[in-house]
Amino acid sequence: MILKIVQVGEPVLRARARAVSTKEIRSKATRDLIEQMRETMRDAPGVGLAAPQVGEPLQLVVIEDREEYQRYVASERLAALKRKPVPFQVIINPRITVSETLAPARFFEGCLSVKGLVGLVPRGLDVHVDALNEKGDSVGIDAHGWYARILQHEIDHLQGVLCIDRMYPRSLMTQENYSQYWGGKPIDEIWRELEVDRAP
Image 1 (cartoon, rainbow, N blue to C red):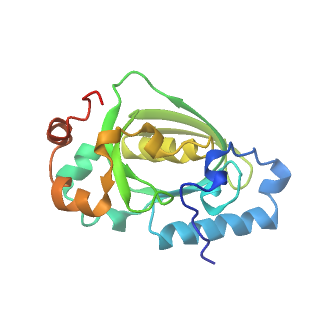
Image 2 (cartoon, helix red, strand yellow):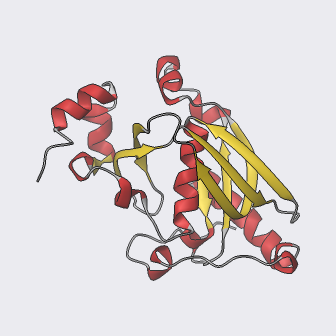
């Protein structure tokens, strides 16, 4: 069953999601929700989906960056993004620590709840996440590059934070215009052309 992905302006996207109890995690309702979120994420398609994005104020996220999504991305671009396939996983009640060893990286991000728009968002390159999986077992995740970005983006949703809150305002554009004018350029060149750091 494909769920409706709510769009920016829906109150659930701006609220802090509540923790999910162990009893809830093992319930049929949660198992069904996870499967529906998986189908919805793949249908979109996307690489991550948080429960608030389907109207459920729960600390629950599904993530999957499939190899087929990367098939038509140039190898140089994949290398620049530090992007590799990520198998399907469920993350519940996550706590994230962003490493400050490396400077944040700026890349364009979009969001299934901010349909059609993208912008430059700075994110940490290394993160550690402590969470529960779909069985209620504790898991620890160390992620780098694009995987770390996905985790930060989705866990932000659980705090009522959207990528548009973190992006540089002058970099906001439609997906169509990004593809037409900017997608093939290095980030540093885009930064200069847009004068992203210019004071308003």
